[in-house]
Image (cartoon, rainbow, N blue to C red; front, side, top):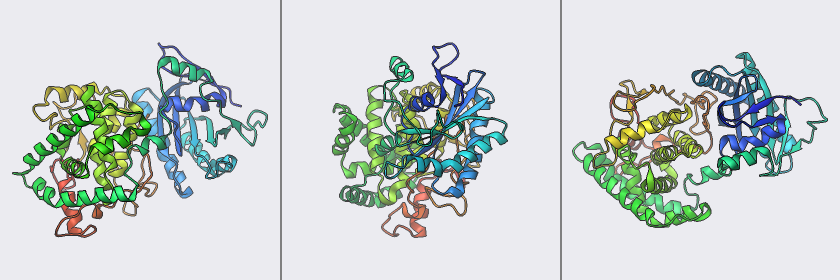
Length: 478
């Protein structure tokens, strides 16, 4: 067993020393804020005692042929991101978390993922940063890919500690750190409805609203009126949610869904596709209104069903922004990663995802929104683009370090949602949580108009025009 020590927290705070794979495996949910199922997690270590630094999470690629290129990208992303924040890492710890389909073959899962672990170790070593430990966590047990000693790391693995019984659990409870369940659970609260009847009725409402709203959003003379209508309706829905005490998480989403009709949800979802409208809605980010707004954005994200999957990028980004603004960084990263999954070129999500992962203080953006909110609840300058379509932080918008967001562009042969290894880039630096998963709807299937059916060039082109970020130039997005 490798003997090394990792300490959590900054140097001037109370530190917890972790010894060996067992305590590392137990600490993972507390480091991430949730149980990262079906994920590869990489954590940078700094100094002789191995202080935890930046961390990065990505869904495990399904195709083994992608493991090598993905490993190279993850290693480069974590190391370069750490260099920008805390200096070059002195080591890296890797976790591969995936349960077996039958719940009884964790060892087979470990062996199946061994080449991926080796690719990650090789990629880090090629950048002169050693992997000090690589663990597989599956079916309630853990295995070390680095320890050859069968006495402490047997072939059948070691059982994970019982929840709440370790020194890390005690320290986390004392510090008020909570584990939010599994990543799958967190994503389920934001995922589109799967019940056929409910999803069909919501899609029909979107189909009805789209032919009347799209031409008005495209019309410069009418778009301001659409924005006012959208924001007024959103305020009404936020007030309605705010007057209803939120239930426990297990039933709260169902209760919120019942408070908003299909037609109301459709009108706000389509209205938020306009950049200026969405930026003004971002002003509802704190206090009771912020919590009610978060409930609304989650509800709207769940209503982006069928061919309207890309439309979820707007409410998911707003949900991520409110979560980050109110101190829920794990929730923010999950929502923003899902927004980028729905639309990899959604600039506002890229900007916020990078800012959250770089450890910037959201107060910079909150001050901007508070100081220029006007009657509509938010500034139009909160997020901007360059003429070439690249995101930037303009003077007078975000006061602080410039944010350089790496754009994620689909490759020519990429399949939406899963894609090639190069298409599914690790877009963030240390602390990032890029994810892969449910394929998003194709662009040609996002719009329905009276004159064109989904899948036709006219329909796809029409909705892309609506959803251009700021209309600053060709190819510019939100």
